[in-house]
Length: 127
Image (tube, rainbow, N blue to C red):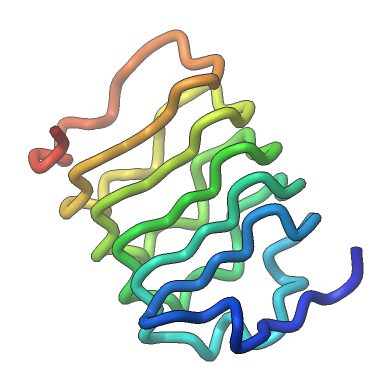
């Protein structure tokens, strides 16, 4: 799919729902980097293979990027206010690069191929 333009009907009170939009690359989403006050983003059920292009969304508290084709947990370092991260039903095999997400309360990873749980020591708010 080509570039996705964010339409006003998708944005409601700091929330943006781009689920099931056949997005293959987050960089395709025109104007996403300008939504710096966004607190909730749903990119689930697309064809995204890499987490990138979210660096400026530093106010995100909820990110749902489940049901995609992601195999690495990278591109999340700047999202230090995240409280809920949903990576269900992807191709992740290892938990890593989450040490900066110290406010994280919920981490959803079911449906992945994770064989060992480690690297969560700094995430003291996880339920």
